[in-house]
Length: 77
Image (tube, rainbow, N blue to C red; front, side, top):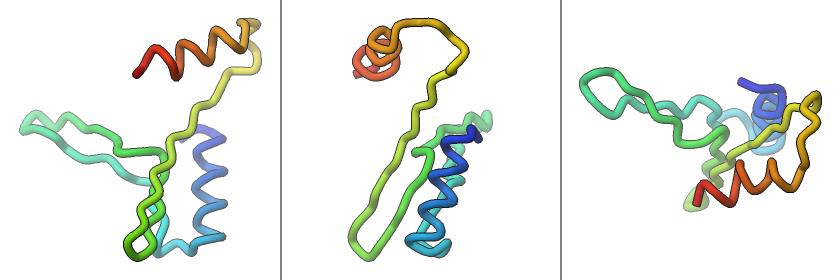
């Protein structure tokens, strides 16, 4: 869990209560034990489901922020 993911998990559990916040969302998808993650954090309130995916940029890398955004978000669609 990254620093940003831990921060969001703590923030959601304090705001929405721990009973409605899930930061462990891994599911086994086959017999081999391969796991997929639903999201970094999920908040479930009655019929409302908030799925949160956090992206964290390494501050020490001197790359262009626009290029980082394109690679992390736009090319994944």
